[in-house]
Length: 168
Image (cartoon, rainbow, N blue to C red; front, side):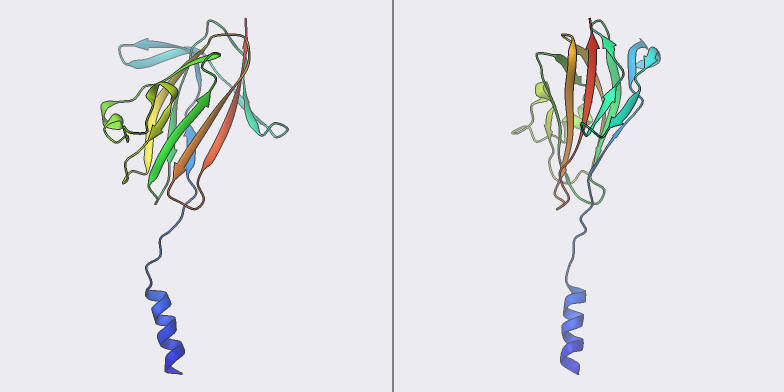
């Protein structure tokens, strides 16, 4: 009778790590923001998003070639370490920039990160990152932006696809 109790205690004392599903969050998406110094004080319009289950993606409002889009993106891993925040897009169709503060740049793994292509990898010990993203179209069409967050969780990675229609 004592042996099963000891075995139970050994398993219950073992160190277990929690695995959380990483997540991505977005602010309101603004079209043609109006700025004053480093602050957005207005915009021409917000970009509406709607999930389209037939393509498993979020369809955005149509924008024009002359438009600029700005929003905040947050990449989180709850109790796990954030390992990467990636944005995949066609650079011949969209000009995209992640506006990274020096505090964010300080936690990037510079051996893997490529800021120009929005491939951000992190040193261990961080579980949330938030930064502004700006993009403008280079040509008309429907352009795909795939946002992916990676962590050291067994439930990683998680991704969201945005489809951006652009008219001339």
